[in-house]
Image (tube, rainbow, N blue to C red; front, side, top):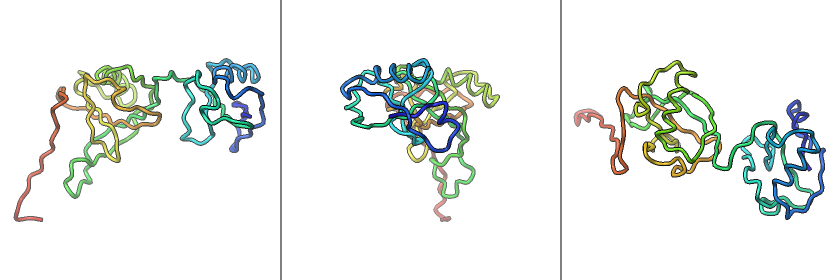
Length: 210
């Protein structure tokens, strides 16, 4: 069973009132083609998810069998309007970051951030290639001009923005997933850290104060 995407978009609750009958050993590609014919849409106009929850990820690998994704007798699929992503593409949230002014304990890992953009990102790109694209995004979304891709620092967010992404590494080395958050910081100089280099933030310590 599945929902009709144009009807569900107008309702708060999802109504799984559409049915097709298929063998659970068939591939998701066959299921999607069958659904497309039933609802009168192209396979490139909608995506398939396992549930309607907001954090449910798109089922991108259309070669997988239904039984291998837990779809058994009377199983349900959630259909949503949108352009399908390639297997190596993920919808990443990029946030513009700056060191927090409210940094009372002096730790270097605290950042203020604001949404920059949510962009489909391919794992086949290098970090430097991604930074090159960020130049256009920063200009379009925030009217910020960046002279060189190496003047952009990208950080993965794990609770806070700590892990700096290296220019020469592929994005597949950073375990991308949908809704992953990456921090973007604009520098006043070029930066090209090697794999064995670290960025240290130093704070002056006065032994006479606490």
